[in-house]
Length: 296
Image (cartoon, rainbow, N blue to C red; front, side, top):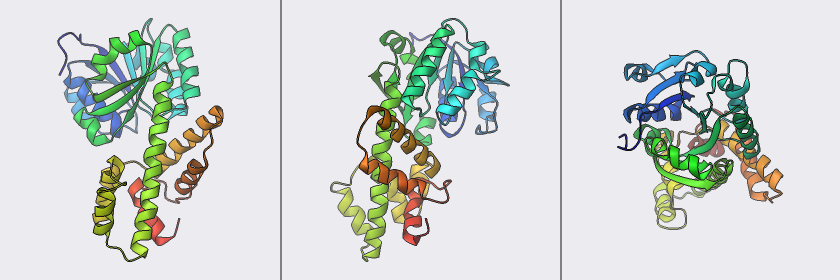
């Protein structure tokens, strides 16, 4: 729903994948205009085109047709590429245009990217996402935003078209910093639970008993519920996040903590677990099966 006090905006999207497709649908549903970069990594876009979205051949063309450009790509290298390579967003960015980076990125890179966007006459916000493609499709993402107060207030109605909970974390870079902290905790607990599930089975404990004890005790929480379907029935759909992305995010966490000078003994073990999985295309819950077979 488009709030009564929010005008229709011209929005451009780069990255219409598992998460970006849901964002795009909800932006259109809120009454905004939308164009997007045509890319092999996109999900099927026929529904977006039927709803009035327009496909563009380059980042420059997206920026030329939009006042707000949302990036929903894999990480910092991809963000820098779509912005700064020939034919990229920066070539078409209008004066005062806004770049919103919803990717998971290194905060130090984010700060450099924001500076270059500002030098080109634009404005920048990092708005890192949590939750899953299911919530993206439902317009119920969580966003962690790094931006000046005025820009956050200006763009909040647009963000509300695809997000349920929005936290203004602070200045530019704060959103991506908190996202890496969040993912470290989430993926770290996933690793702990995976190893516990395997140990429980080796000890001859019924899966139902394990889930009952953890679910009524210290193991309860969002990550526990996402892994529960796999432990119960081998269904990984509750956590559609690849081991490759987990490895990338924990690697970013390591780089950030290097810069901050923070101890990370536990994080090193978590990184080694994900990096040691041979098939990086697996979903995170499937590491339970890998650990159970012992064939990492």
